[in-house]
Structures are given as structure tokens and as C-alpha cells.
Picture 1 (cartoon, rainbow, N blue to C red):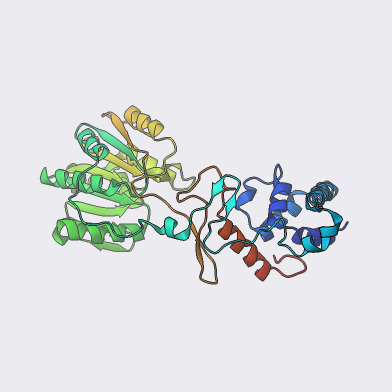
Picture 2: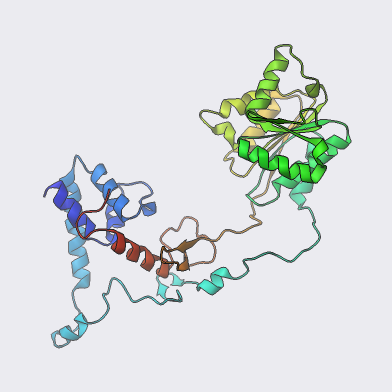
Amino acid sequence: MTIDELEHLLAQQPVSLLHRLARGRIHRHFRAGKRRLIELLLQHSSQNLAGLESDLQTLLAERQSHLRPSRPPTRRREQTTTTHPKRPASTTSGEESEAGGSAVSLTTWLEGIGVPPPQPFVPDPWQIEALAALAEGDVVVSVPTGSGKTYVAIEAARRAMEDNRTVIYTSPLKALSNTKFTEFSRLFGPEKVGILTGDRQENGQAPLLIMTTEILRNLLYDAASGEIDVRLDTLGLVILDESQYLADPERGVVWEETIIFCPSQARLLLLSASIGNPQDIADWLSSIRTTTCRLIRHTKRTVPLRAGYLHPNGKLVPLFKTVGIPYGHPNQLHPEARRLFTLYEEETMPSGRPRR
């Protein structure tokens, strides 16, 4: 069988069979759509197309054996008019069942989404712990997105400025720095907040300066070479947002040098939602700095995640059978989402070979 014939045969198969064929061949194959899956299968087996063809024929034979009618011959005509056994008719409410239980409805999936009613703000215990630890040394805060890292940064900055200390807040992106400049100017007043980026410099003598991490690293370079900046003499707090950039192959050295050259009298506050080894980072800071670094870790997500699928025809359905995201169980797709996936593939893929 030529590669074109094999590609044509693969395009005629359902996605479920292609995923079975990809097991052991393609890593994280469950994330690929039908077109991409066919491309990956052909690429992986470019030196052994006969092996891929053999496995495909085996799965096809197995599939045919499951599709053989088990009813008496007298009812064969009746059976051929029923719904295909591999694709049961799905309901628009998403209530049909699969192995593992029934799926949630769209109403259930949307329940509770909206703006919560106003209520007094009460800091979480981990936020109080982080601020208390920052009074004694450096702190690494590793908590999920939406948990309240910014509150810790704002309150720590407020306390440092009340103590007549300069605060520097860094972010990896100019756009994020501009956003924080607007936010902090509204909170503290425009006269107390300045910004220093590659293309924007405003109120550079303010007690709270927002900049990219590269700008701060350059300021620390100048200080190390003898060009002392007055602001560094009064520096009391350095906030490194998105500190997972320490692991970036190209820009990670900027964060490392910033931490190494940071004045010893200034407290370091590292914020991140995606550091894989926060305790190692805290231990490293403790080993190179004069103060001990505390890790504040919180794993419970305050704002839960829900995954949905919006089809080009405008229909919205839950992506999974459960309200939340079933981590580690990608096969728990919602039956209506699965049906829409198949519909989209049938609508966009030519009858012949898949598009590239």
C-alpha cells in the first residue's frame, strides 16, 4: 500500500480508532484533531509504513467483528435501519450516558457563573502569613491564579512606603507593566507611582516604581559598577511578578542576576502561579541572601475552572462530562462535545485526503 493509499484509508476511519492506533506511537495523542493525528501517524511511521498498515488492518478487523449483527437473520433488514452502533443518537441537552456515568447538562455547567454579591474583604490565612513572613525576610508566594497574589503585593508595598522605603515592582512584559501602572496609580495616587520601561518613563522619582525585570537588572548593574542610583539606597521591597521566568531558557538569567544583585536591605517578594519547584527556589534564595526565604504555598483554587466548547455554528456545550476539569482523564469528553467534534471534522475534511 502506498503512502497516499494509506493516508486515504486513515482519513476514512473514526477518530476513536485513530487514537487507538496512536497509542504507544504519539505522545499526548488525545490532544490532536483528526487531521493532525493522521499527519503524526504518517510522520512517526515513515520508515515503517508496513507496520502501521498491519496495525490498522488489525483494528479494522476487530472493529468489523464488533459490528457484526448478533440478531437472528430474519431481523437483519430491521437492524440496518437503526442508528449506527458506534455513533448513538445524541440529545441536545447533553444528558446521554457513557461508561462512567451520565454527563452534566449545559444548565448545570453554567450554574453559579456570574458576578458574586458584594461582601467585606477578609484576607485569607495564607495572605496574612505571607505579609508576616515578609516582615522578617524574603518570601516566595506560589498559589493558583486568581487566589489573591496581587493583594499581598499591594499591602506589602503600602507598608514599605509608610516606612519611607522605595518599592520596585517588576513584570516580564511591558503591557503588564502598563496595566499595573494604571492599577497602582488608582490605588495609591498618581504622584506616588512611576513607570520605567524601554519606551515609557514617567515620574521616575516616585516611591513606587514599576518596570520590566530587565530595567531593574540594568539599574543594579549600574550600582555594581559604582554608578549608585539614589533610589537603591532607600530600596525596601522588590516584587518580582511572574517569577516562573526563572526557568526561561533565554530570559531566566535576568531574574537570576536581579536576585543576586538585589541590595541586602531590600526584601524580595516572588509571585507566581506556576513554579514547579518553589521550595527549591526558596532554598536557593536563603543560600545566597543574608535573610531566610519563606515559601508560602496554597493549592486550593479560589476561582474554579470550567471547560466548554463553542462550535462555529454558535452552540456552546460543556467540554467534559463533569462540571470541573477531570485532570488526567481526557477520555471523559462530554458526549455532545464529542458529537460536535465529529460534525466539524465531517464538515471541514474533504472526502478524499485530509488537508495539510
